[in-house]
Amino acid sequence: MAVLSQMRPIDEREFARVLAEATASKTPIEVMGAGSKQGIGRPMQTAANVSSRAMRGITLYEPSEMVMAARTGTPLSQVEMALAERRQMLAFEPVELGPLTGGQAGQATIGGVFATNTSGARRIAVGAARDHLLGVKGINGRGEVFKSGGRVMKNVTGYDLCRGLVGSWGTLAVLSEVTFKVLPVPEDTGTVVLLGLPDEFAVEVLCTAMASPFEVSGAVHLQSALVARLEHQALKTQGQAVTALRIENFAKSVAYRKGRLKDLLKVYGAMHEFDRQDSLLFWGELRRLSVLQGSDAPVWRISTAPTAAPKVVAAISAYMECRAFYDWSGGLIWAELLPTTDAGAADVRRVIATHGGHATLIRAEPQVRAAVEVFQPLEAGLEKLSRRLKTAFDPAGILNPGRMYPGI
Image 1 (tube, rainbow, N blue to C red):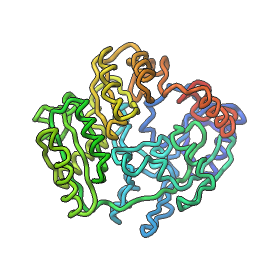
Image 2: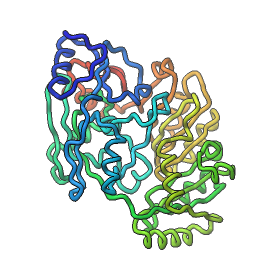
Image 3: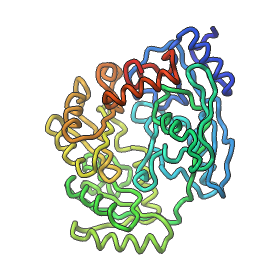
Image 4: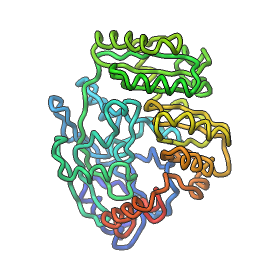
């Protein structure tokens, strides 16, 4: 078998050969794109590193149909640049995870976005990354090339396969090409900001706004400890918690909806507005997760019911210091904890078991990630299904073995 220590196959045929040889010799391999998320997940014992980074390039773009296809090693920045030239975008605005764990900024690939199902603030309005995926091409652990899905959402043949592969972190197959829908860039963007609200009132504001008819596309709350890390000077220097609501679309519509939203929320106190430029800077900063960078403290990504989010943070705070950034109207919590021997895993799992939700350890030292459950433990039925999928796609268990769960 060829030496696999570090390889960058240039096409599906070469990748298929590498995987077939690895399966035949039962050689465990680390599959990656540019490696920006290597520090996330359980540490793996692999004998080789195989990257899709050489498989790059946009293979299809039809702006009028709002469809794009790209090889999975294509830099996300290249995809977004091509879309921006036609005033279009990836509506689910994937956040940048790499710098949280020591990776370089701007290195993410479009394949990595879908392999990890990375979605940002606009998910509450347009859905997650997996909801925008139309089709995939890939190579399974046997070295077999497959294709699933099509160029329109109503082509559901194989759609469940696409959804199964999204978020599998390279443990089932290597994605070689993805086809996805895109949306127009809003003509205008505005933000309504409230300052100094306690978490409970802030999430109440977010939920009230989301239940309104005013089409909010971003709903976040940052505790004051994280506001102090913002690059946005006006917010950083005021020293209070920030609750922000984004409204997008045509300029006249944005102005009208901001006014109505302020009327709806006036009982919660004084409100401030950001124009388009300030809004783009603020939401762009949140997309980079800049307030969680520059620290080695453990970071957890917790999804729960929005109304339960303040209770989850309060319960965790009873065990250790917790700095929280609420996204998705409270449905997503980025929690930075004071360092502990287990990154707070035992207490976080206890809180989640009580209040409901899922928790993933995003940042921690390798020895900690090796000792605790990084991803949310699977229920018996889901674990059985996951093992069946792993057996079907990767019978020799060579692809990112154990990155998510032992033996999967």
